[in-house]
Amino acid sequence: MNKHGPNFDDLVEPGFNALARERMRRVHKLLITVEPLPELPSKLAAPRVPYSVRLVPHRRRSALVALAAAFGISAFGLGLQFGDGGGAPSPDRVIPMSGTQQAPGAAGSIALFDADAAGNWPMEISVEGLAPSASGRPYELWLTRDGKLTALCGRFLAEADGSTVVPMNAPYKLKDAVWVVVEEGSDAPLLTT
Image 1 (cartoon, one colour):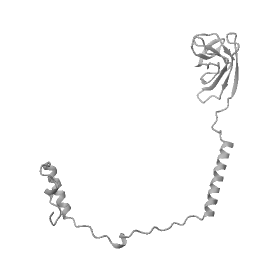
Image 2 (cartoon, one colour; image 1 turned 180 degrees about the vertical axis):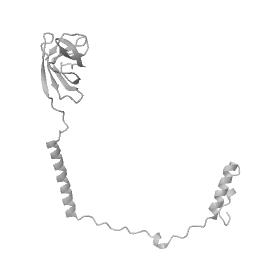
Image 3 (cartoon, one colour; image 1 turned 60 degrees about the horizontal axis):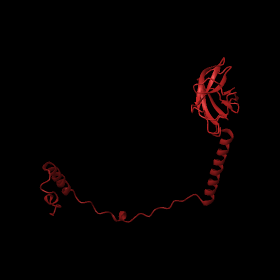
Image 4 (cartoon, rainbow, N blue to C red; image 1 turned 60 degrees about the vertical axis):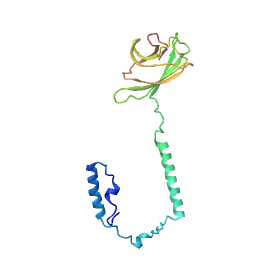
């Protein structure tokens, strides 16, 4: 080490890449020409004493917490009173379905909701007593005109106990509509409105 800092050749091996070695030599020369940092002033050497923060007095803090709690409870109550409660919308009407001779113990209903702007009628079909089909095929809900299947509304499977609840959709005009439930591939109604 000389009076200007460590010797460059003592720091970097001679077999180092010549181009990189020359760059490092220039940086080394710059570093050893820099003056040392001045001594730290004594007023900065001692840690600063943190200043104290005056908090809201305990009585006021309790009052603020109580006010915030009352506001939260009021907002929750108003939400329950005037909001939809996050529940499902109620149907516009419920159309009962009864079993035919092919399924005399079956019954059901179609909960029909308000149509959207495009003309889609959301609905939910509920059935009971309609055991799973022997063929394993699903059941189908059809809209009929003049006794003929005209518009498929959807397919569903029944639980082992013969019940199910399935959301569906009917993008059709429903005036004078008659719905039937048939087994897929058949046109013999099992349930009808």
